Length: 194
Image (cartoon, rainbow, N blue to C red; front, side, top):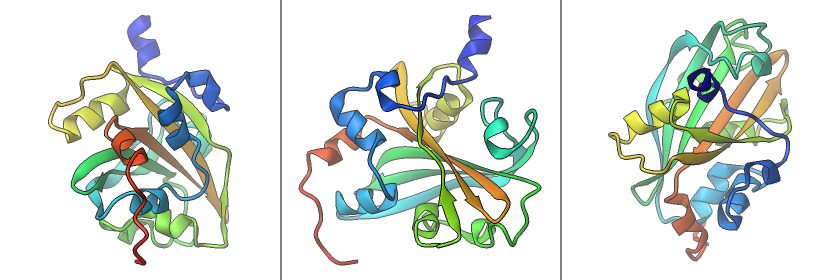
């Protein structure tokens, strides 16, 4: 039974529930665009697309995107890199019933940031952030570990997720923060205009 419980995260409505260290909590609760914050704390920001394809959503994602149980979704996974270092593993799912009208740019993002489109589209409505600890055994832990060549060392990673709505389409973005993001928090923000 314990193995089954690790495959689903316990998503909480407040960051205090995950007991993240203060510096990590600052990243988890940061308002606005994570992309913009990462750009401001690095000299070079890059989205490394890992894959984007039809898939079955994870068990702890189904209800968030309007499904009664895990079903067909469009899935996108990326690493967000600052100055070459991976700092966030991001996983996005869209209910496959959503139309191209709901999310017209999703299929053509390539290595562009999803956040740069979400926060500047007046039709997008952002839901409430939820927070969780992702442990070994959860599918996102395994996927992040594979993307990083098996280099994950911590037993717990902190994550947040949020549902976005555009027309009738629901899109769920989950961001798993890697320990390397903490080095950015102490860095002098980049004030260059981009």
